[in-house]
Image (cartoon, rainbow, N blue to C red; front, side, top):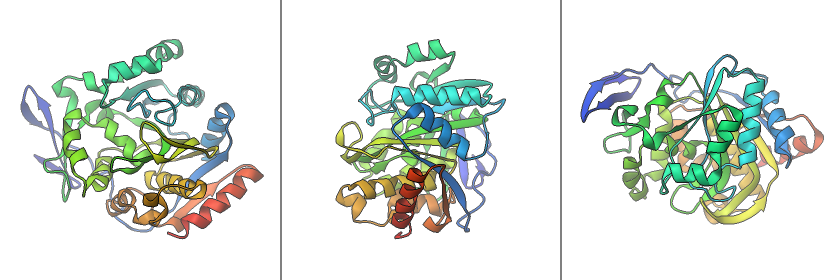
Length: 327
């Protein structure tokens, strides 16, 4: 095994392990840092996604081969999974920004990934939009890399799809919902579970005490260049496939998973959610707290800057800031 910034990796090939290396990804530790996220109060994905990304004032996809990770854990109706209109408009925006190529990558579960992609109509969308598609579940053994973080709650690490580690630019789009099977909530941090092998799911789902921390630890394997959270409709209870639906009419974009999820939790608190959300401070949620310990993003709510472009969005952002600053 080769140590690399707290990570041990080995790539599986024919049942054997071969050494692999990874450069330091999260050297900031838990020092204070600020981040900017954008917020658009809208139910219009076509204009809202464009505006949310433009407000960030960055273009990490220009001339890059982009790997796009949606939330297609199942084929359930949004927000059980990424809305197809969100996917389409995000692809259009990435193309407008000059992405050299776009590849959608996903691993569903428990259903077979191929079945979910077919039910969602993703094959047809990819053909129509000239987008490539990787079904991570169909990768051969040497298409997976074993990640062994130090001081991890995983017994022997976890496997991440090699295309993720090879990608020069990862864009993710998540939903905003509660998770009724131990995760508490599922947004950008939880989205990373779909980058891991199904063989890891038994350990994750049976680790009732450590599950939220293990979710955060998966995120050490990669850094997203851009994140879009679709909170037009949310699950305020239940989830992840079905739940109590509430209208929030918000799109949030950024590059910091902790900031994105913290803002999403503030939205849930604003619309009214279950006891697991309402009864705990945002930065005390285990996914967030462990991600902070790992240096994956901001360490406190005051370091999140919310940028907007209109009065309605600004007023809503102020409401979320007040909720965030309560912890």
